[in-house]
Every structure is written in structure tokens, then in C-alpha cells.
Length: 371
Image (cartoon, rainbow, N blue to C red; front, side):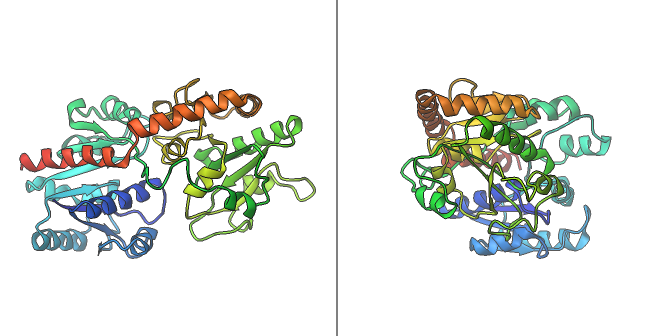
């Protein structure tokens, strides 16, 4: 099939990463696929690094005539079967194509928080042939607040490349780089520095645990793309305040890290302290590496983390509760090992990127048949 992915956003995050991963998988499995994005955004830089074919368009506004015309010419020339949009701006740009009968699929990667403007609801209900929700919680929000028919929404969660993330990966190099003993118990959180990621809660919980368990190590992997290293130049104010110069830091700041597989291998437990998380890319990566997870009970995280089986769930925004969960994991080696085994089993049975993309291809085939 010939698939054109569209992502007009200028920033970089899980939504953009998934778009590129899907494009790369399609190409690797014999399909033709491209990414339509802005030359001014980080998406174009990452797509170039991955060697993916691109259609560079301004896409500066929701109804960008230049972009619409460029997409139209490209789709005719390359015989595009499906347009797959990922954000609200590119979804609006695709409206004329949907109206003209072209197969359009829309993904929703973010939590649906509450009643929206009527225009957005109409766009979800009538702006595409199918909607891909990356978690069941997102689907429920679309049905409840946007009144989208449930049968129009297909839930396809995050997938992980099991050939890259596996228990055999070496984690010692990462530990050595940041002075973490090979036999130390290591907890870690990862993600771009955004308020909703709950990193401030993680830092507070780490400080609490350090008082009773000084031998435990904590890392915080994140920052902005391109800000590699351990400098505090790009840290938000709340994080700078958490590390006074006269007080030792409860966590080790690694900065932005491009490769996550060595990090997951180095961790004993991944922590996802988000206040709000529609779905998670790092949880499947941790599970595939055989690592349990402590996560907030919010959004799509409980769909992955089964409390008391492959990890623990805690109340968002409660550092005391998170600290108790960390101590439980640290103090009980057999519990941690059992959760690890269950996490690996869950990843292999449910989280393969191949299975995720086969479901996506089924969606594409369905909308093409209705053309």
C-alpha cells in the first residue's frame, strides 16, 4: 500500500516518534510510505536522521491552501492509498480530501479531558473514515465528549520492537557513564520535561526514599532533543529549585538520551509519575526488557500496568505514595523478580510492534475498500 503520514507539529515527543516508527515499519515491510511535515519542525530533522522519505510543506495553519495543493499533487503522482493524519492541524488540512472521497485515517494520541468546542467534535465525527485511538481511555473520551460512534474508533496501543528491547541488552555501559554501581538498585523516570509528566513528584519521592535507603540510585532521563549531557541549562524552574547547590541531588540527571534500550537494560524499575498520560511508549520498552513499572493510575497507564502483577499503580501527584511503592520494590527482591517475569511475558504476548502495525494495516485496508 501507499501511505502518507501527516504531522504538522513543530515539537518532538511520543506522538511524533510513533509517526516515524510506523512509517519506517511500513517501508521495511514492503509498503511505500512518506512523512508530510514542516521543514521548520523537529519532525523533519528526525525523519532525515532515520532516512525516511518526506514531503516538506509549510502547514502553518489549519486550512493552508499551499499545503493542500501540494498534498493533492503528491497523492496523484504517487498513487497514495491512505492519508493518515496525527494532529488537529493536519487533520483539518485533510478535510477536503475526505470530502472528495479520499481514504483518511486520523489518530488521537492525547487524552480527551472534557467537553470540547463543537467544531472539534464535528471534525472527529465527520472528518475521517476511521479514528485510531492509542488507548481505550482515549476511545472512551471520544465517545463520551465528542459523541463519536464507538464502531468508528479502533484502539491500537503502543508497540515495541522486540529485537531492540530485550533482556539480553547491556546496561552496564550506561551505569558506568553515570557512576552507578553494577549491583545497585536503580530506579528511573524518562521523558521530556513537561509539567504533566510529574517529574517533580518523582524527585520529591526520591528524596524521601534516600533518607531511609541511601544505597538506592535514581536517574531522570530527559530534557530537550539535542541537549545531551548532565547540564542544567535547559531545566525548568521547578527542577532547578529541587536541586539547591548546598544540598546533594536525590537523582542523577542524564540529559536527553537518544537511545533508550541501554537505559531500560540498566534500570531495575521504571517509574512513570505522570499527572496525565494517554498512553506510554516507555512502559512497553521497559516490559520488553523485563523490567517492572511503577506508574500513575491515570489515562491509559492502567491498561498496561496491572497492579500487583507486572508493576504497581499509585495516585498521581502523591510523592508519599510513590515513595512507599519504591521502598516496596526495593526491599522485596522476589517480588521485583516476579513482576519482571510477568512484564516480559506481557510484552511478548501483547506489545509487539509487528502486531500493532498489522492492526493498523487492517484499518487501512478497511477504509480503502470503502472508497
